[in-house]
Each structure stands twice: as structure tokens, then as C-alpha cells.
View: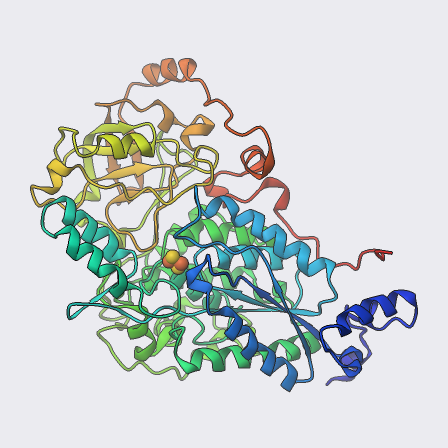
Length: 574
Ligand code: FES
């Protein structure tokens, strides 16, 4: 250990190092857990922030991961203490886990700051658990490592690989089109999710696990090792070892999460065909650490990046295949000059050093930059009178011929109205489906409903995609020509609120344009007559959220959570 690190009193010493009544209280009650005296001798105390919950199936194996982190911490002379925070299970929570992302970030931030911790390991898996923990920890800025829980093994259904989410969307549309029986659909249920872990497509969980690695806040290979592969537990063990060293090196989050790290992450997101949700989460995370990142950066930095990873929903394979092909290090290495190689990472080495010898074992899964799966795969940011503050579309998951389209709107004021009418509406595939009231304030919580099901009449013709626009998000596992995150949202008085059935809408992704082709005088008339929706919540967290949530282009954080307060030691409790 360097001398200056030895001399620097650790944060935890303000609790456990006191030889007085308060020190007695801080140590004595901890000893009821069977912790011996020598653990309170001034060694680094490492918090293991755990989102384990049986209500979050993607994170249900996390107690075992925590045990392996502890082995590494003990091995390096640290003192691990596991603590729970609220967990967010994507498949069960209503109205949407996104409503609670910021709440969990507060839980994480306050739990870290209030306790005698010197460093933190974040255990993250299901979609929102990753940004929530990163955001909360970033506002404290202690040395921190992210450990993802890993994806499930590939789904296997009647001899075919099926992917979480992606095949739920495709098979449920097949049932509605009369191409698959309901009994077969139900049979696929247990074949899709057959091991511990999170969605194994390049959905939001896999995207965010990749962002953890690309930002340098997780160890190399964090993104893709399956949850049940023994090497996932080795990674957890190594993270436990490394976090103790990071405390001694004072390698804080803010030294890792620099502008260069975010630029690397944006480019990696394009190369992997990552989720549009990464846009919102990374904007919010950048806001916490004080890095100036804007929606337009996603287009500017990611636009020319080729799609290298052939995973659903943009491609064919699944996360297990990505790991066997070389994982994210092989992808980052392939990006060459597009990556800031000098960005520091939690491994103690730079990004360039981490990936310089990363091999690729399967070019069907990870393509070369010279022969990519698609050119220019980055998320496109649209502007126009329908989205003056921006909207996004994922070109790699869209239908090329629909990227330039003019069509008349068919409008759904709510998602419930859509579900009620979608099988009876008499429209053809040239129409533009418009959904309102699904933004941060409107739902509330900004749910993943933007990939609206198509009208049955259209599906029965064999059509599989239509232009769909909304202020919602969509699952990272979903696909289609789907414009999302329209800002300002309808509930905040955005132009989206004023669209009527039959209005002409123009989408031109190449020109980055989304336009409501209605005379300005008519738009003004409609705006003057528009009334905001009545407030639905008069108390509780939902009220706090609706009053303070920022719009999509700002990351949908709560306005008073932007920035960081560090981890100063508060006054004594007794
Ligand atoms: Fe948890 Fe997809 S439902 S990651």
C-alpha cells in the first residue's frame, strides 16, 4: 500500500475507529452479526449494494454473486458488508419500473452516504437496476465497481433459439395474425427463460451491462458472461479484490466517468445495436457526475458507427453467443480509432490496455469494422415541429423503406384505448400510428409501450412493420420503425398532444425530420384550446415524480437530483 494511502484516514474510521461511546455503539451492534474485532482495525469497508429480490427474477441469483464478491474483498484485506436497496423487476412492476428508477437512485445515494463505507460494489441486472445504482452511487462519488448479474442462457424452443422479449413480441403478433396457436405460444413460455439471469437479447439489461463495461466502471467481460457460467462468479470475486485496491488508490467514480467514457459508451451502443433506453439512462448519469452530454451527442458521435454485433433484436444471435465469440472486449477492440483508448477503467488499466489483445472467435456474431452487419447503426435524433427538443429512432431495428415515409395519423390518446381498438380499426399500413400520454409525466413514469402492436387487419396481410410515434420508450428487445421519446411529451403540452386522426405526418430519418404537416395557424388554434390532463396523484412518490421529473431529452431524472453531493461524513446520530 502506498504511504499516502496508509496515512489517509478512511471514511469508515469516523465510525469504527472511535474510542468513545459512539465508537462502542458503531462496533458493538455490528458484532451481533458474528464479526470479530480485527475487522474494525481500519481496513477498507466495502458496501455490496444488492438488488436481489424474488420479485426481480433477473436478479434472483444475486445473493450468490455477493458471496463471491465478499471472497475477493476478504482476500485483499477489506471488510465487506452487503446491503439491500429497492429492486426493480421489469416484468412485474406497474405502471412501469422507470417510475421508480430515480427513487432507487435516492435509496442508493442515501444508503451509501449515511453508512461507514469506503468503496462500493453495485450488483445490477434487470433493466432499471443498472442506471438506478450507477446514478445513486455517482452522486456520492466513492470508489465504485459495477458487477452485472449476467444474461440467461439462450432460450430453446423446438430446436430454435428464442430470445427474451424479441420473440415474445414476434410470437404474440403471429398469434394475432393466425400464424401460431395460443397453445404453442404458451408452451414457449418455459422454453424462453430456462436459467438464472436477465434478458439474453441485446435488450436494455444487456445494453446497460455493456454500457457498464464501455464506461470503464465494470471489469472487462462484465457484459456477456452468462449468469450461470462459473466465470461470472470469478468476475464477481475479482471485482471484490479490485474494489479494495481502488479504495487504496482513491480511484473514484468521477475519475472513470469522464466525457471520454461517455463518448466510448455511445459508440459501443451503436456497434452492439443497443437499446434506445441507454440514451435516457446515460443522459441522466452524465447529469449526476457533471459531464455535459446532450441528446444530439448520440447522433453526432454514434451515427457513423457500424453495427458489429449480430444479436436480436437487430440481428440473429444471443448474449451467450456473444460471450463465446469474445464478448465486449472484442467489439471494443474492433472499433479501433473510434474509442478513446486512454479512458481510465476500474481495472486500473486504460480501455486501450484492457482490449488490446482481445480475440474474436466467431465473425458471424462479431463482424469486422470493414465488413459490418450494417453501416451507420447509431441512434438517430429527430427534430421538427412534433419534437422541437428531440425524439429518437433506432435505425438498426427499423425497416429501411419506412425510414422515409408520409402517412396520415391514426391517433390513440392512451395505451388502453389502443388495446381496445387495435383489432377493429380499419386502416392500412400507410398510416402512422400515434400514441400520446406515455411520457415521463403523462403515464406517469415513461413506460415501454412505444412498440405498439399493429392493427390486426394489417397483420393478416402479412405486414410486419408500420411507422409508430409516441412520447413513450420501448423495450430494448423490441424492433420496428418506432419513433420514441418525443420531447416535450403530450402531457407537458408538446405538439404531440395536438395531433388528430387524419393529420399528415412526415418521417425522414436521413434528414432527421419528424414533421406534422398541418398549417401553423391550425396548430396555434389547437394549442390555445388544449388543456393539461388533470393531476392524477395528490400525494406520495408519484406526486413528487410528476412535479419534478425532467423531460426525456434531459434523461428524465428528478430536477433536484441532478449533480452530486459527494459523501461527506454527517454529524453523529446519538
Ligand atoms: Fe429483467 Fe429483461 S425483464 S432484464
